[in-house]
Length: 274
Image (cartoon, rainbow, N blue to C red; front, side, top):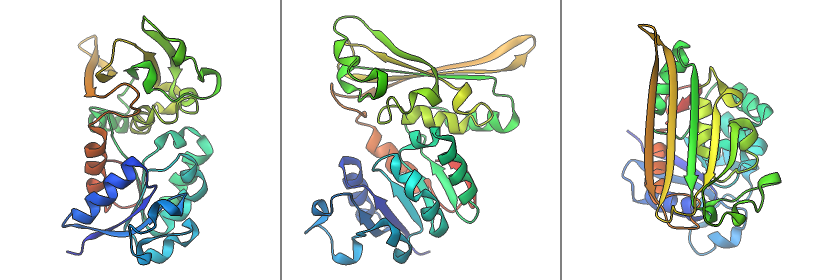
């Protein structure tokens, strides 16, 4: 069985981790690396691995293209990626834009669009419920130290004013939150994709800045299912991911994303959770 050829889009902390992991993995092979600043790649790779322009991605014979750069990449290049390979969207907040989601779903006719589970515990079970239409409600709450948030729009700078007590920054549809915290709520975007019968408008996201959380990122998932014997089916999980103040993602994120990368690909057209 030939190694799976991986194209990596983005060479920040996560991109560097994934690139090294691919180079060390017996069943993976590096197809290409792209970064907005090519200077970051100079002297680290042979020219054959450097993609200077993403329009050229089809020339590298990748089996799976992995985006770990910025949500705008999926809007600009996602359909092109899917024309030549499976595509793992590492910034699924991009999919909160309905046009982007629609364009990628339409493009995933020969290859698969993969959404990483990330910190979204129980995603496969929720996907199964969504497939059956039995998922009635889903709420994802993320609690982090105020310094861990990178916020935009009308939330920009609000976290910096959180001093002594926990403050709820947002509580509402995930679609409205994604553009306000595109670096922080990829887990929620993944949840909205898994819970496809509810989608970005009916999955609720709650963002809480808590100055007491100096060592953890906390993700709570609340699931509401059908009535069983006259009572609502409910699941409530709490995930505590070790993290330092100021860290956008927890320390377990890199390994979790690598697991998603290894699992992604080969499932055919359509949208898949990994």
